Length: 190
Image (cartoon, rainbow, N blue to C red; front, top):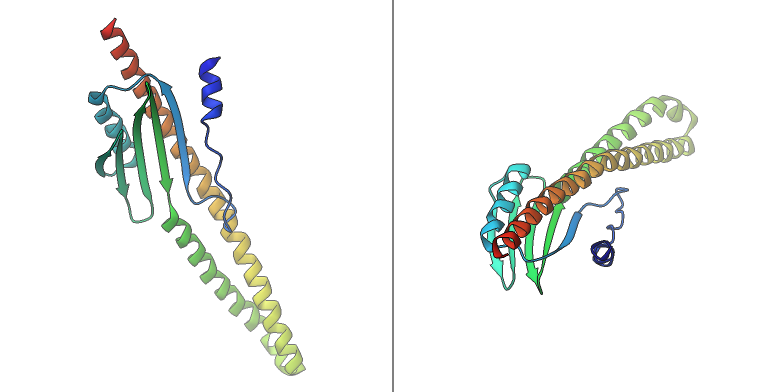
């Protein structure tokens, strides 16, 4: 019961959605009772390397050891901190370049759609006069803009669910490995 209460007080708030309709960064964070042995931290980073698929770099500052990796589309950070007899496991995944790519490609698709709609209405508008041409431009830009915005949000929401799940799965694996190491250290000292 006490562990659940601590978990609730240390849970991080979900990130706010972006203009894409879903967050562009995902965080998993848990606190465990007991300090993980220094020798077991490498095992956690091995799990992160395997799951993320990148070698990454390890740094240390004060009571936190951090593993960072960067791919062409995202950045990943796993940190392990020990404080006051407790261990914090954090996973941060930021696929910001992937989000930008979705935005760019749906915008390019929107421009193509605007041209297509404009060409489809062009002959009729040219015969009707300048007001019809202006209306054709407005309609084609509106339809294409709204369509690309809806497509962008739909695509990113689907991808964001995968990134969120990936952060949660990795975090859960790290917490389980850290808990095993903490329990083994307790058993060894008893």
